[in-house]
Length: 178
Image 1 (tube, rainbow, N blue to C red):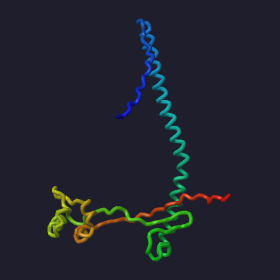
Image 2 (image 1 turned 90 degrees about the horizontal axis):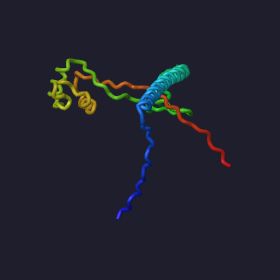
Image 3 (image 1 turned 30 degrees about the vertical axis):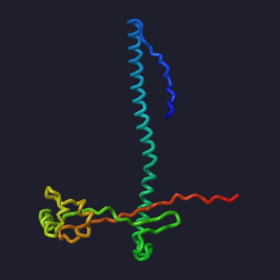
Image 4 (image 1 turned 180 degrees about the vertical axis):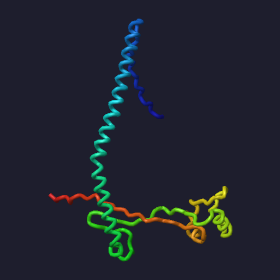
């Protein structure tokens, strides 16, 4: 048999209840003042947040610019020495002491080189009806999922751009044995 959890009794909350018309007027006045003060505080909070955000954006701008300069320089060096760095393009990641650079392929995108109706007709000839949506447009997601068959179609070109990445390592000093 399951044991019952003890129920906690909630204490009654003291609530101000006006006893006269004058107390009602006074309570309404106080409530209005409190609401106006809350609105002022909310506006002040918005102003303070905007000022803090602006200050930090101003402080962050030179850091962003320097980071972009370093990234661009690393990319230029790596692209210029790619064959040597990647052992004649055998690897896509190069590990340095403080991090790595790598070349990764973006998600493939599908671009039409010819009229879409002609490509749809070509899909039907090759039995690739799953590339065609019921409303006669090409299903680019299906094409990306079946790139091997998509490459047989003359009216399509599969584009896959390569992007460059830099990944610094988070390094810590070795601990000294006691």
